[in-house]
Each structure stands twice: as structure tokens, then as C-alpha cells.
Length: 262
Image 1: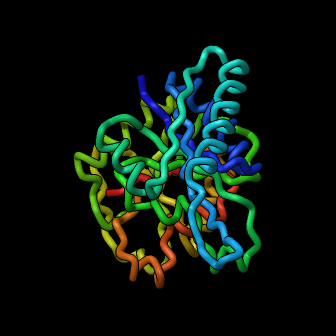
Image 2: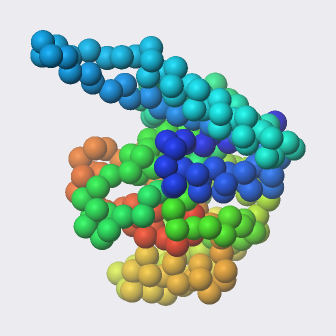
């Protein structure tokens, strides 16, 4: 059985993400593993000392997760649920689970933010995009439809899809049981670049002033439920100064985005 890891932090965004993951699990016949990363609070004493109240904090978190597990198991008896609680960094823990083949997909929520917060802030899904060996679906807090019938796979015309990447993409399409369409957004500065896609893949080419406008408009036109983005393994320097396609879509898309690294 396939396993979907779902980030839980007990916010409204997290609740919406769980509801979305439940629909994905039903469609893909997968188990849901509820993931909570602990960050112990600092306790200041009158003497000025600082210590971590690890035991009580973990017990409270475990109780809350067990209550959530019990609630979801009763509400959705046909699904299998589990919990994962750790003090490890989420990137390290998710990578470990993925490498041990214990998870097949990670689903994270994205809270609604103002334009300035989107410009300056970071999110867990953005921090992980291109850095973990597992596909990531980012679900906006505003997205309540929770449907998955059609997926757009955004690809670049500068390179072919290598066999390994192509295999992972088609495995995801099979897992999610969606109708997939490969799409290339051709902007003005790319008109002189010769198409080099795999010949066996049919690609829809859309002309637009920029990638974000093109893919979001076409997603709306075709009533797509999900956009797949192929991300690079960016360095921290690159992430600071370059606003990638993945980042733009993750922060602004009205429908969920799934990122798969090359």
C-alpha cells in the first residue's frame, strides 16, 4: 500500500490539508501518515536560566495527535491512518522516510498570506521544493474543492525528459489516477529555442507573456485540479535571489501544485 505523509500543525490550513489528503488517499488507495514536527518551547525561570520542557511538550503533542488519529479513523473507517512525531528537522525526517520507501507523497498546507508576506516570507513547502526525494503537493488554505481529475504537467522546451524523471512522473499519474496533459508555456524570449521534447510525448504549447500567467490561465480554461512543476535542486544562494517558476506558482495558484525534482 502506498503512503501519503501529511504535515499537521493544528491550524485551519492544516485541517484543510488533511481533508484534501483524505480525498487523495481514497482515490489512490493509500494510507495517510500524519506528521508533526516538534519544536520545544523555551522556558525562562526567575533565575534567568533557560531550559527545554521536552517531556511534557512531547506528551501534549502526542495526546493531540492521538485524538486527531482517533477522530479521523472513526470518521473515515475505510482509510488507514498512522502518526509520525519527531524533533528532527522536517527535511531530514522526510528524506529518511522517502529513502526507506516508507512514503510516496508529501502533502503540505499553505496559509493565506498578504502580498508582502508572500514576497518576504518562506514556507515549509518552498523550503523543501527541490531538496527532498519525494513529490510535494502544496494546498492553499483557500482551496476547498478537493477534487483531482485533471493535472497539467508543466515542462520546459530546453531539454528532454530523462528516463528516470519520466518514469516518476508517470508513476505519480498512475498513483493519483488523474488525466494528465503535458504543457509548455512559450514566452516571447523563448520563441527562437527549438523544441526538444521526447517525441513520444504529446505537448500542448501555450504562448503567454510569462509562465505564471500562461499556466494559471490554461489551468482555469481546462478546469485542471493540479499543476505539476519540475524543480531544480537549487542552492541556498539561488533560492535567495531567483524567484523560480515553482515558487511563483506555489504562492499564487488557486489550485494545488505538485513539485517533482529532476
